[in-house]
Every structure is written in structure tokens, then in C-alpha cells.
Length: 442
Ligand code: GDP
Ligand code: MG
Image 1 (cartoon, protein in one colour):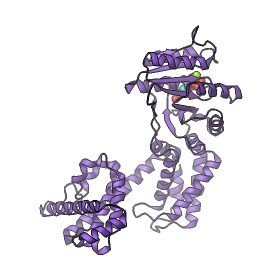
Image 2: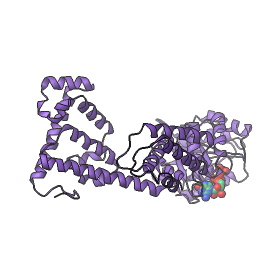
Image 3: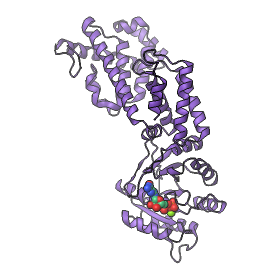
């Protein structure tokens, strides 16, 4: 795996602690191989590796991680970013039913996915209806009906009077039906071909024009590897779509298709389908896919652990300083806040940070930008002010507010918060019992 190879690459690097150009090149080669093995398209690999090299050069050398870990962390973060960062949610129509149209090659998994998506929506209290607009394949309508029955969602199928043989008419009538029967989501299954052809594209585009979907989802089989990119591009040009659904992720494909498609089309992967069961379906999680592409979930866990340990060590040092000198400065305060941000996702271990208890309530919906604001304010202070916040009088507050682009009231609030945190920490110290839950504290 990539982690083994990188560990080899860096065998002699431990303790050296700095990434040289040669180290970065050697690493880039390994990453390139790993991505190609995961079936990522070559142009995407090249662009990606260049971005990683760039960032590796600019990065400060981490104290928490060894060089191999540090590079892997960069690679992982870049992967997650390209894969869409946060999972994108479905956009629902403001009025009337939300219309979701599926497009993709025959065998991609559209009909199966239609039912899975319907079940998923139904579980969230929606009242979806499935629409059989694939009139190409002999059994397509029946297949959707069977699937609809499995998930307990009604299927709108062509009958005399609503457009037998005409998928555009079927789709149009289905929307009327949805409005009449108060279905809030309409999922339109469409025909695919084995390969991309002009007639198929036109049909899909006609349906799209007729029903103006809120979301067009491109459904693609993760197993088709390199071909996925070409197909994705052709559908983007021919029909256009807002998001991508990867199917058959239960197979052994490493998921390079996800990266290639996201990178080349700029469309987010929204859902992942991984199995024959109707419940084998979920929102797409960029971070999970990134570790699958790299094939090294274990390494990522290790990295998380290493950073966590490092942070623990840092806060232990901060606490020790406080005990020995009774000192707690605005710089320490800022460091604390930055650690909260780092650890935000691991709110479980919050208890270990000195003075953090008071923030615990806010942690679940902690506003990331809040830390940026605090940082801006503190960085607008002089070193003397940070060391001795008592000296920050009215005119200094006005200057700091101006320098950081905030209001004086923001500066006041920050200074108040600081003194509260300090008081709290001193109380804990005086309590004599050391830090609650702080490993290694006297
Ligand atoms: P369509 O032609 O795009 O409508 O594709 P279908 O929904 O008919 O699926 C084609 C085949 O792939 C069927 O045999 C499905 O059972 C199978 N299939 C669909 N999704 C998945 C999946 O996530 N995992 C697996 N293993 N098979 C799937
Ligand atoms: Mg189908």
C-alpha cells in the first residue's frame, strides 16, 4: 500500500524532520503510482500530484508527525477537498414537488438507485413517487415497479392516455400526478444505452427540458474505472447534471472514478450506492472515499492519534506553565482556541483541555469563524498587550478594533472572556487537585 511505500521512502528521514526537494519528489512518485492503481485518470493524477508537491513545499514542518505522515495528511486533505469537502445535500424545490432526474448508461444502476433513493427519502418523512421513463428496455418499467413495491413507494408508469412509448410525456404526466396526489419528491428513472449515443442524449435532454428538474443526478458504476471520466464528460455536455451518484461501491473498485469525475466535471459526488439491498445506500462521504482511494484508513487513524497525543502534550505544557508561574496570556488563550478548532470533531476529549469545560456547551455548534475573529483581534495586539491584558485600556481597544476590522464591543467581549477563562483556570489550580482528566498532572 501507499503507506508501506512511503514509510520505506522515509526510512532514513526520521528525526531529520524536514522535507527536502528530493524527499518530496520521491513521495510524489509513490502517490502517483497509488492513484493510478486506484484507477484515477492520468490528467487528474498529474494535476493532483503537482498540487500536493506545491503544498508540501510550503508546509511548515509538523512537530506532531513524521514526514511520511505529514505528506499523507496533505494528500488526504487535498483528496477530500476535490471530492467535495463537505457532503452536498439535495436541493428541494421551494414550491411544488422536488423533481430529481437520473441519467447514466445502461447498467449503471439507475433503476436500483431510484428505489434506494426513494426509500431513503421516505425514511426522512418525504412522500416520493417513482417515474418509469425508461421505455427502451423491455422489462425496465416492470423492474422499477418491483423495486417500488420492495420499498413501498408508488410507481408512475405509462398507460393508455399518459404517453405510452413517449418518455417525455410520461415524465410530464408524472409531475401532474405528483401535484394532484401531493407527492413532494418525484424521481424520474430514464433509459440508458450500453454506450453513449446521440439519440439517448437527446431523449434525456428532452425529458430535462420538459420537467425542469431541481436536480439531475448522473449515475455511474464505480467499477468502470477509467471509462467513467469520458462518460461523465459526455453526459455533462449532452444532458448536464448537478451531482454524481457512484454505484457498486461494494465491489473492489478503489474509487478512483470518484476523484476523476469530481475533479474533471467539478460536480460533487452526492450519494454512494454499495450493494443489492435497498438500504445499501448513503450520502457520499468524501473523507471515507479519500481513505479508500489511498487504501490506508489505518494510517489515517494513526495520524489522528499522533496529532491528538501531540495536542495533549501541548496543553499539558501550557498547564504546567500556568502552575509554575501563574501566568496565562492572550497568546495562551488563542492557542487554546485553536486547539478547540483542531479538536472540534473530537469533542469527546474536550475535558482534557484546561479551562475548556466552560465552552463545552458551545462545542457542538462551534462557529469556526469565531476563532478567526478572535485570532484577528489578538493578532492586532502588541506582544506587551498579549502578555499583560490588564494594560488594554479604552484607546488601545479602539486601536485594536480598527486594526482587526472588528467593533470595540468585540474586543471588550474577547477581553472579558479571557479574564473569565483565566479566573477559572486559577480556581482549578488552587483547588489543588490538578486538572480534571489531565493525564500526567500533579
Ligand atoms: P440501470 O440500467 O442503470 O437502470 O441499472 P440497474 O439498476 O438495472 O442495475 C444494473 C445491475 O446492477 C442490476 O443487476 C443491479 O442489481 C446491479 N446493481 C445496481 N446497483 C448496485 C450496487 O450498488 N451494488 C451491486 N453489487 N450491484 C448493483
Ligand atoms: Mg434501468
